[in-house]
Length: 199
Image (cartoon, rainbow, N blue to C red; front, side, top):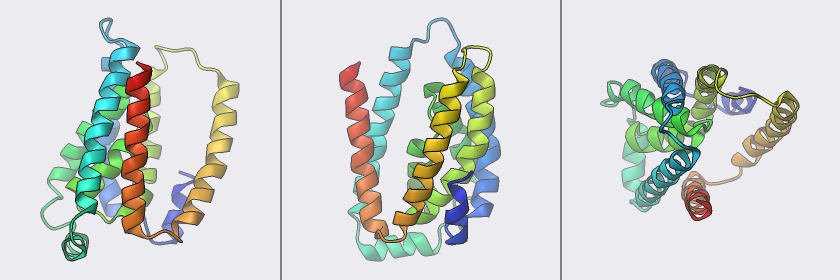
């Protein structure tokens, strides 16, 4: 939520998309967290699923980035015409996935908004931060009865991440959306490969 503020001031938060995406994503995140509590679901299985999904998302992001600028302009100029019906379903699917693997959701929400919702990259980043704030809260509630939390770590990490996301929002203004999308795709691939190798 803190990270969403500077993106909002830059006009990169699509409130309408967030309102449509977030409710089903919140439900999905809670369901995903409960699925993760099933006795046959292991941490290794969760991480492998996460890695595979991230590899797929990376390939799709890079492929989209490779299209002509003309096609990107067409997609960006009319992202909300035929996708409003699909966005709640995307939210549910992404919510289940991110609740299941226990991540905030940006890795899955941004590709979903860009690839399926036709949202411009920078707008997808800002919008995803707002969605993540609400969705992570419900996923957190789903895990409360499963784990014992280190509150000192939670507080320290939250403060550090808040400074980091504000810095990221600042530098976002100076990076071309095309390069940002491509860089995001390669970063996702690197994280996915690291997880799969470690497991």
